[in-house]
Length: 264
Image 1 (cartoon, rainbow, N blue to C red):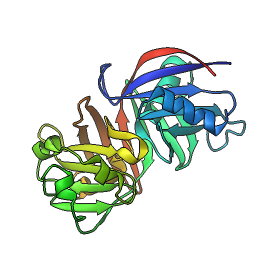
Image 2: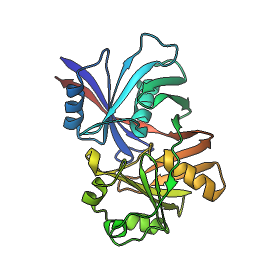
Image 3: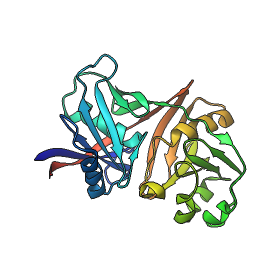
Image 4: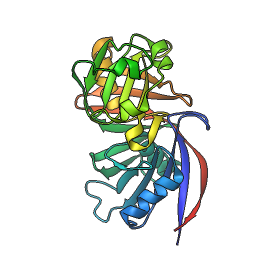
């Protein structure tokens, strides 16, 4: 059988930057082991699969995300890529698409050349810095540490965020879902990086779901509800975020890089 596949670069305005995601529209679900094998073969941080729902009262599509090693409960860049594919390339004729996911119903809204995602807010709880974390960051001492679905280390400045040399074995052994490092940005409001070696992702280029924890923290400290965030990985990417109660709005662009077919 052949199936269409697309690859888009998310949270960027030019290809070869941002976070690449594969997207596979399906009519019906393939077996889970096939979905995982496809994601492993793609070897991107996430591959998104979606199928149309027969009952569209609450959502339009069922959306799932797989890393090369596991299925995850929330993914920003592959959701952005899925919505942009529908809006820009597959003749979806509405301005809002609703996805049924493991994190509930997520909406994506077309806004000019951007797509805005409506995601859950996941504020972290402050706790002590884990023993050994400074060494695991290449000798950089965090000034704070929070834990939500993801761990988050607060650093002194963007220069330190960029300078982190992670001990991926240490991070893979941490509780919860990987590690965010973040600080106030130099030419943006917030800078960050995200490491998820436990999920087969040494460093994620741009991570929408991490901003469900990043944004609540920095909104409170910077005293502003709208934030321009940059993930300062090697590929880099921009996210335009807004705190909205128990939700986080995350906007960005996703550009089509490749389309083709797979044979399984």
